[in-house]
Image (tube, rainbow, N blue to C red; front, side, top):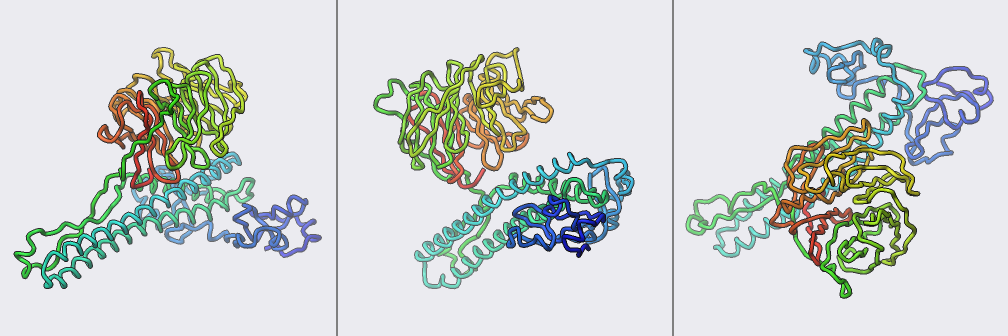
Length: 537
């Protein structure tokens, strides 16, 4: 450990795995003893007070970093089959049959980790931390639902109890206890999932902060890199597991013949898990104004930063603004029929128009102001925004433009099927682009990393239209032909809202962040359908 002051460290040529970044900027070589989580910076004792003291944590020892977090034993090998670091206990318990094992010193020489790899892994780890954070909200909502459903069940027990004799006192207690027991069981089960999520977050954060480019210790760098990658993989596995498990509720089933056989019963009924419907409430809200000349067709919906909703009405060439109570509070006339809409952040929106034009607008306090327009050579049937770039669907081709209208790159083209590239949306990471086409039977998924477009074929669609990406990364798709809203989770497609609750011919869908609900626009309809949900999707 270096204890030299500034003057001595200027002459120090020792090699450290963690160097104080403040000293390094001054040409000094001093070992870092602390890490500031807020600044993401390693500092020495002398610079400890220059960063956020409340976020300061001691730097992990090298021995601790080199140990398996499951068995507290040092890593000695790497399993190439499972892409995992292994200690002696890992080898004995989980990798006995693995043939593709190598000692770490062999892997260091064979699988060199570059600074570019480290930076890329850091970025993926940060994204994973954000993804894990998003899943705390669904967990908390499920806890609230279990609590509320338990209260409802107990109320039903009490109502039922008042209709029978006083001899039910003991039976009432047994029944309430059974509900509370199941509630505790479900809550403990859910809390275990929450604790697992928090543990993944903590482990990923602590391990990620030790992963820095330009490390001089290859073994530790290799271990840190693979530990982060391993935790990232486990995090995504946990997320997948969360999304495939249905939410639980508690329901009380009364024994209606209990009065006749009261003396022989031990409780009032059974408390059991109930898989609740995702739909809480379905409502319609008017979008037609008095001076609208035609029946409305809301073909685009997006949520703004302040919770307002922006809707495009292609029948009346208008942009309409709704407040959080789904009341119309603003309107602007557009130069031609709007084809699609997307949010650009800070209450700015981009509207694709039928005359090969994209119009930029801003909504402040329900007032709509035009910021400018750009003219393109191709038609603009669909539009999406991510990281200061516009993604424009033009019937048969998908292009990326900057916000000034300069075409940066052609991303995808299908000249065989007219209208096959009608609408598009980009996922939250900017790594995947989803494309729908008029009259098509599938959704195309374009992977930004390799430029390959693949159809998602698990469910046959009849006419996929509007798209929306939820806060936790799921994709919603309007299937106009079957009058339903489909949910895409990874490569899996399932029906989220069926024809019973979905309006006819849905063409636009939006998922609101603040209060879980779906906004659905449809063809030839003077209202939007608002479906309030029981859970985050």
